[in-house]
Length: 390
Image (cartoon, rainbow, N blue to C red; front, side, top):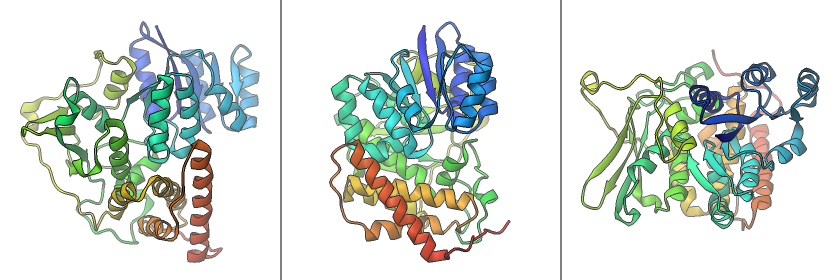
C-alpha cells in the first residue's frame, strides 16, 4: 500500500486526490494532510482518513486540532511546514499548494528522494532548472498531475522525444475568449470558467491565460523541449487534454472526460491505470472537435510568459510573483482585471536579470518582486481601495 502526503488537501486537487484514495483504499492511504485556513474541511478529512500528521497555517487552528486529536502530529507555521515536508513516512507527495508557497515543501520532498505528484505549476515556473536538476541528483521522480501535461506524458509514452515536432498544449480559452477584455470585467465574471471547476486563483489565471503561459514554461522543463516547439491551441470543449505532433506528421492526442481524478490516479499509480466512477465519453455524442489559435495581443499574459523563457530564470520568477500579487488584489477587489497583465508587464520592464543559484535566491527574488508589485499598486491607487463593479 502506498502512503500519500497531500500538500493542499482542502483545495480542488487535494479533494480529488482523496476521492481517488477513497475509491482505492486497498492501494493508497493518506498519512499526511496539509491545509491552509480551512480547518472545518480539514477536520472532516481527518475524521474520514485518519492521517498520522496534519498541518494548518495558524497556531489557533493548530491548538484546536491538538485538543481534538491527541493521537496525531499537528504542525503549523513556517517551521511546521519545514518539518512536515521533511518527514520520511510517505511514498508519494502530492504538491498542490497554491503559488510559490509550494516551492520549498516540494524542494524538501525532492531532497528526500520522494515521488512527487506535481499539481503546482509555480514550482517549475519559479524553480525551473534548479528543481529538475535537484530531482535528478536525489533520484526523485516528478509525475505531473496537470491534465494537459499528463496528456502529453501519455502521448510520449514509448516515443522518442527527439522525434517531437510540436507539443500542442490545449487551452479552454477561459470565459473571455469571445469577449472584449476591458476594465469593467468583474470578479464574478472572471470566476465563471466555462468547463472546469477550480480554485479561485487558478480560475483567474485561466481567464487571463496566464495559467497556460505557466504550463508552457512547465512543459519546457518537464519534457526538455525548446519553447518554439510548444504551441497553445484553444479547444473550448476541454475534451482533448493535449496532443503531440511528431516529425512524420502523426498527431497523438489524449481525449477524456473533464475530471482531475484521472490524471491524479495515473500519477499515484504510474504507470498503471485505475478504473474509476467517472462517466466515460461517448464519441458519437461529441461529433465534432474544434481548435482555434489564441490572440497573443489580447491575452498579454500568455505572450509575456513566452517572452520570459528567453529572458531567463529570474524573469520567470518575477512573472509568477507579480501575477500572484495582482491576482490576489483583483480577487480582493483592489485592482481592475486589466491591471493584472499591465502590472506584470510593468514589473518585467523595470527589473534586471539576476543570477539564480539556489532555492534561497528564488525565494529572495520572489520577495523583492512582490515588494515592487505592491509599490506599483500603491503608486497606481494610493491608499484608496479600488473596487471592481459588481
